[in-house]
Image 1 (cartoon, rainbow, N blue to C red):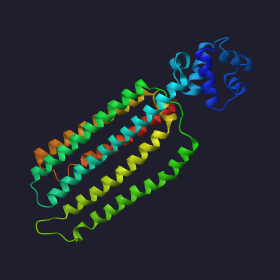
Image 2 (image 1 turned 30 degrees about the vertical axis):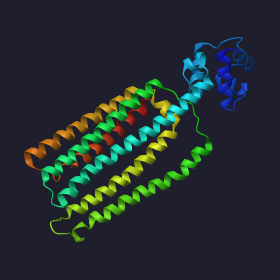
Image 3 (image 1 turned 120 degrees about the vertical axis):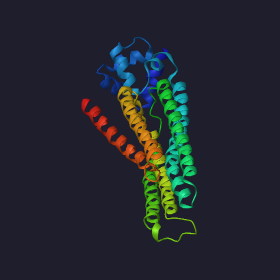
Image 4 (image 1 turned 180 degrees about the vertical axis):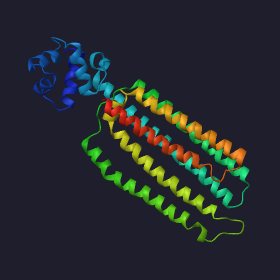
Length: 296
C-alpha cells in the first residue's frame, strides 16, 4: 500500500465511511477507491482536490506525509494556539475597557486629570499592542496551518454547548449589575473629595468583567468551529478588507480623541469616540460579510 493509499484509508475510516460511500461522493466506482487505497492507481487532480475538501487536509499531507502523525501534531498545535489567542484577545478587550474605568475612578477620587489621562493612554496603548501581537500570531498560524481536521468529538461539542448559555448569562448579568451602580451613582454615598464619576468607573469595571466573559465564551465557540476556520482561510482577501477598514476607523477615533482632548480639553467625554468606532467597525464587518455571502 502506498503512502497515499494509507492516508486515504485513514481519512475514510476516520469519517466512518465505507469505500462505496466514498465512491458515491466522488462519483467513481468502489473498485476505483479500492485500487487507490491499494496503491494500484492514483486519482486525477480533480478527484484529489475533492478529497482534500472532503477530509479538510492539504494536498501535500494527503500525498506525501503521514496523515495520522500530521493530524496529531495539527490538533495539538491548534488547541494550544487557539487557547493562547483567546487569552490574549480577552485580556486586550478587558484592558481597553479598564482604561476608561481607570480614568473615571481616578477623576472620581480627585486625582489630577493629567495623571488620569496618562494612565488611560498607557493602558489603552498596551491593550492595542496585545491585539496587534494576537492578530499577527493568528495570521501566521493560519498561513502555516490552512486546514485543520475535525477532531473534536460530538461529546466535547455538546459539553461546550451546555456551558455556553451559562457563560453568556453570567456576562450579561455582570454588565447589568454594573449598570445599576452607574445609573444610581448620584444617589450613592461619596467620601470627601469624591464625585459620582467614581461610580461610573465602578460601572465600567463591571462592564470590563462582563464583556471579558462574553469574549472568552465567544472565542471558545470559535475554537470548536473548525469548519469555519478552514472556510475562513479561503477568504483571506475579504478578511484583509475588513481589517483595513476597521484599522482606519480606529485610527480616526484615536486622532479625534487626541485632538479633542488636547485642543478642547474634552477628556471627560471624548473616550466615547472609541465606543462609536467599535460600533462602526461592527456595522462595516456585517456589510462586508453580507456582500461576501451574496457573492458566494
